[in-house]
Image (tube, rainbow, N blue to C red; front, side, top):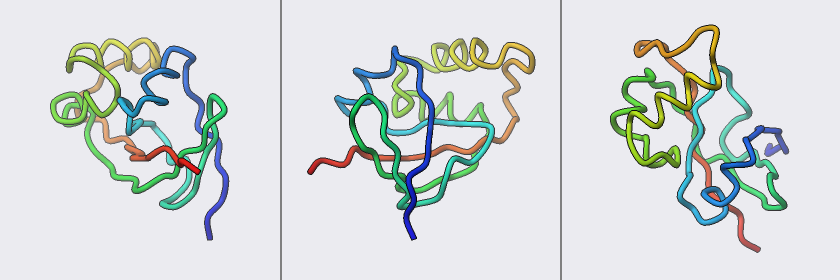
Length: 103
């Protein structure tokens, strides 16, 4: 059964979320399950799948789907959001893939 979940995003991601440049988000915890949905910036998004990856793989292969222009930008953003723990390349996190729901 699908549920509405809350996935917080910084305001600077609004444009990339709404124009489809950001199609996944990696988090230290799981925010729902496939088919759950969330609302952000007045729009609804459906979680397609959630996969666990090491941060280094996200930086190498998914940085663009995270809405970043380079692996280094992804690393810098991660470090800024996680100042105490910082960047640990082998840390495994939950990557939530989603798409905007257009009605």
